[in-house]
Image 1: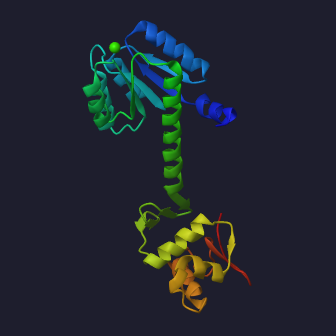
Image 2 (image 1 turned 135 degrees about the horizontal axis):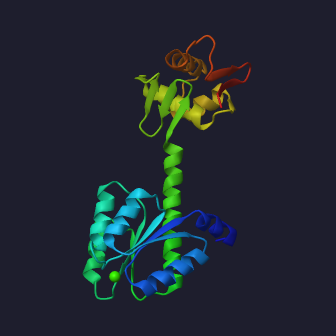
Length: 240
Ligand code: CA
């Protein structure tokens, strides 16, 4: 991986260390800060839970054996509250069974003490990358707002002024294609090929009919469309 790439990822990543061994905390905190991470420290389970609930972290380094509340309990509670922050559990060598339990409790990975700093950094990097990919994917799938129209592509739901709009499967597929290619002029042939595919009827008139239906359902004034524009002689273009 390019080092610039790694720095970009590290720079805004916030890491919470929940660990009670003072020496290890210092070593971890100093090294992680040197790597460009923003680091916070909690010295027991309760404080860890409190910090993790108050602030948003990109990753939590969670010791298993903690005073107050164990790492497992902290992990369990965070997941129960709906947190999906990556958790890297730190365990002592003998606690093999606990590792398994830890992962079942919702930890994303674990590392056995004593560990090499390079190994820890690699695991952190991998977890942050994975989380970034998931976030990116979710972002792509999230809802879109076009004036009074809201489209949730993931849930295949459309509302207009808060009221649900019923679309046929084909209308929704056409709308999805428009949204994914908004700002681009799309010919009737392209739409027919991409949205109807092999069931394509020979006539591009099908596209016009579906566009007209979509306009009726989505546009404030179907005769003066603000979302699906006609590009004379070329096809259609969805508003940017
Ligand atoms: Ca400990």
